[in-house]
Amino acid sequence: MKLLIVSGLSGAGKSIALQALEDLEYYCVDNLPLVLLPTFIQQMIGGAEHWAGHDIAVGIDARNTLPDLLQFEETLNTLREEGVDFEVIFLEADDETLLQRFSETRRRHPLTDDATPLIDAVRKERDLLRAVSASADLHLDTSRHNVHELRALIQERVARKSSQLSIQFLSFGYKNGIPVDADYVFDVRCLPNPYWKPELRKLSGQSGPVREYLGQEPDVLRMYEDIRAFLEHWMDKFVADNRSYLSVAIGCTGGQHRSVYLAEKLAACFRRNHEHVQVRHRDVS
Image 1 (tube, one colour):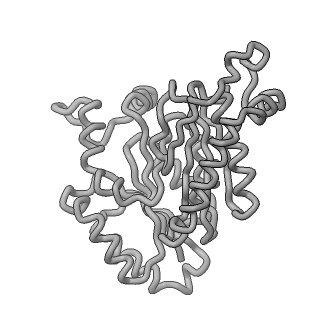
Image 2 (cartoon, rainbow, N blue to C red):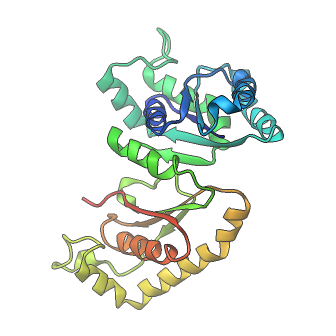
Image 3 (tube, rainbow, N blue to C red):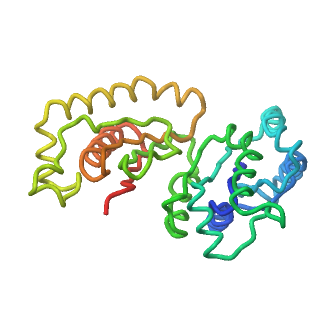
């Protein structure tokens, strides 16, 4: 029996994540009072024959009391002492995205009232959930994901029933912001830029001409080897630390050429020795 504790900011997609897990036969409970979590899990374990083969996902949010939220790490220690196999997933998004989502859906933020406008409620919630976020095994920034993309992301990165390390290589453009859910971020803006080649400008790093151009540049190959060697050196440390996820972000100016090329090349390399390797290009149009 595996426990996923799914938390995050209101509007960041916690309910969508739980629905996706429910579709994958997780037994899901949302907005469980944190103080009841250890007792609830023990009740589920006590009925192991009935729940055999079912994993559990529990939603925890800012509607818990502040003292309970501040004791989040202590609650996790209790679960560890009881031998519970669990992971904590935290979903977040930038303020602008959250405000837009609440405006579009006309839903009420759980922390708003007559004296608390929406933006203040969003910021207050970030503070309340700081201890939960700090304890998360995986952070997912949903700012640029629609409902269908978030469902797919949950299936790829959370719902895989495997004890092996799941690695994601993510390309992005600095002009659109740095991904907040990356474990490592590598800046490759110093490399030769295909954008300045008119015949390559509208292509991506996945295209043959761009791959050929970058593959002949010594600095690009040196950057690839340095990143590859760094990750291979530290990969065993992630595994030894019982980490299930590793997110590696590669950034160039626009997220179209250099970062895409290197993310694809690194993913191809690590697929040789790792079963679960994904690659995603955040800003490829």
